[in-house]
Length: 204
Image 1 (tube, rainbow, N blue to C red):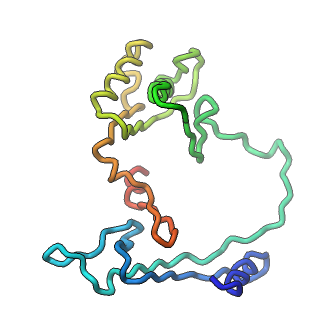
Image 2: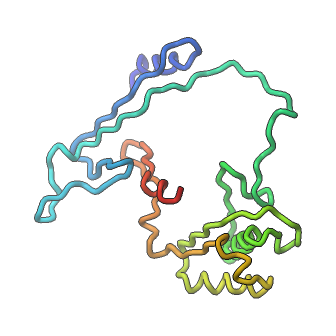
């Protein structure tokens, strides 16, 4: 990108200036993949299975207009700022991504199952403290369903959890065999991030 074009985009962020520009990016037809509904699809193939080499393989991506503006800022009174929307244990936060990171064999999966059961029954299973109920979809890409079932059964047995307490609130599922289908995004050779929109819509 030239310095002139970059300066124009930055200048458009200042209040009072016209809306930003729309950027259209073209890549060569030698690209091995193309965009289909926000998903990277494989290169077109002919009837004999070989990759075709026509211009349909060219990726054309249209970016939306830049409407972001730099606004004057004044910090609101502390009493008017809403508290963080914690879901559970000041670890799971709405509108944010939380991560539990540790070395192998440190019970990360077991702790997540305990957390999920705690939300399902409305009680912190470790401390006994009442909590607001929440639903959990637990997707495990490391182990088969049989291993996941053993871990869930162990937690149920330890804390005496009955079926009716978690049904409809906790959904543990192995996705080891389907992990390729759960790719939320991919990065093109040019560095652009493409979101798997059909998968996002499937979960929402």
